[in-house]
Image 1: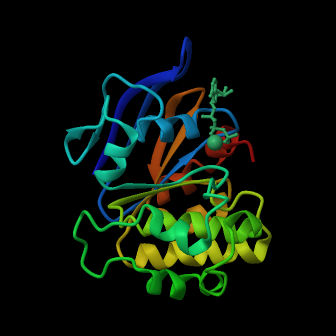
Image 2 (image 1 turned 180 degrees about the horizontal axis):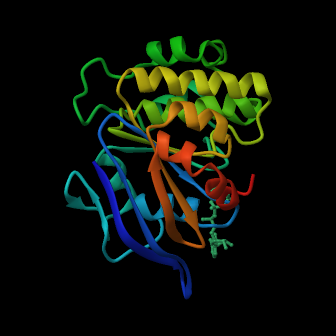
Length: 232
Ligand SMILES: Nc1ncnc2c1ncn2[C@@H]1O[C@H](COP(=O)(O)OP(=O)(O)OP(=O)(O)O)[C@@H](O)[C@H]1O
Ligand SMILES: [Mg+2]
């Protein structure tokens, strides 16, 4: 579905990505791992068209390079960005409907009703301004907003970062429910223990390069090497 093949890119004259390759097959959960500053968020920005790239990124065989961010979103990629970035002066309800659509004509699309079932707390707070939500609630809103675009591929950049264990558990529970539905997900997170259980395939970035990749069994087998790369 999503393919990155030897992608390079960066910010102005400062190159951050040197050789990033990864692929997210339909219906799978794939992780992008690596220590702070290794280029995970920059890779996500490259996929979304927020960091310019010349070649190497395709979605269902068609290039995404050079496309505008809104065009890329319309092609079916939903992003839950690092730091949440909900619209602070809109209510929960307004945040959810602001970018909602079902362009891919998904059967059983995400609706306000279904988001309310997934995150009852958002339903209770529908009329509350997003800036007044707790961190965990903002994260749920960011996920809900991305789901309301009915993406073929969902990208979560540090969705559990800085959350209390209980709230983190709710987010993991949500991701498990999405997996059961067959949602394709690219997941960036530092909780390796949960990712081991949840994800189908893993990639590790080191200084803007894909230096290791493997499935669940390979992750077990190469545990020591993986730990040196992700710094645990
Ligand atoms: N807007 C920017 N302009 C210039 N350099 C940037 C910009 N954003 C990030 N960088 C640099 O790019 C490198 C990779 O950063 P990136 O945010 O992609 O890392 P990351 O793997 O997501 O890290 P973290 O785990 O801390 O989120 C870092 O050296 C960072 O300083
Ligand atoms: Mg990051």
